Length: 416
Image 1 (tube, rainbow, N blue to C red):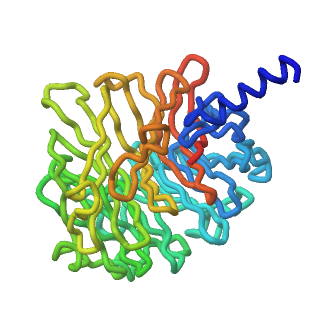
Image 2 (cartoon, rainbow, N blue to C red):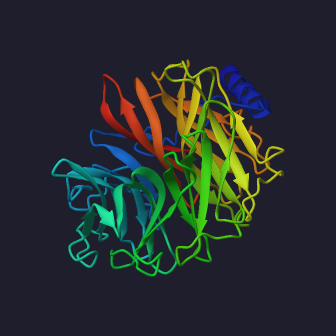
């Protein structure tokens, strides 16, 4: 055996015996998927705030318009000729979902004559507006029933083809609002009489940030209440009334301590338990930005905290700087994935993409990125706005990527 072959054999044997290898030597859970857009990330100059994955694996990103990628991270030229369509109004999308028939529903806000109105649009699979939706492919309005609605924060799809949205609803104060549209894109009057239902938590403003639909058609919305001091959760029956099986009156708040906390994402486990993610701010109110930790809670069907999760149903994850959650997903094995941002100090910038994964018992999952926490920097200011899981478990994240080399947005894919 030559010296070169002998040396190579020793190296190979040593690598086999190593319990861990570096990200550069072999892909690991939580690392960028280098099969996506060549290096794991695709950059856009257009804004992007929401992401959904089609049944065929194509990736839909919504922001100032809709952009669609093939599974390999290249722009899908079969979508509107170049992979992108602009929003059909002045404004942008903050939420997106793909219906079973492949039609794309996006929602957000529009600016009309110096006022802010809520907005929806639906696209056919080829990128053209679906004219069967609200008569012309879009719904832009100021009111649903008697309630003012400024913005759609999240959308979910009902099994009957309805479209459910959490919304910023105003009635002197901001109220915790949920809207339901029919499959034709008009307010569903079988829901609370006019298509909008609200929850009043107290005299302070309350904000609904995320929404999910149970298999029985009940709607779960989460956000913040009590001057943003607590997570808020509300559940509506399919007719729009509050579900008394949740905490007796269909609503509850969850305290994490700190000066404020805010829920930004909700997901439902297969057993019906409700998982909520957001952020909690520690430290004195005098701090400009605070010390932020990712906060996660899990509730039973009746709204009570699930003590099998982190001991009392709540946990937060801290770092030397800040960790903040903006997105939530549950894997097929029940593990909980939270996406957001990380900063090295308690200042607001610079920030990086951050993904945290928890085991079902609420502990950090050490099989993900070594300790359960992945931080990825692309430029000077990066953060995840939304996240979706592919059928193979890979994590697709979209958000901002601001820096000298690129100003805009990043779509990245990570190994699970």
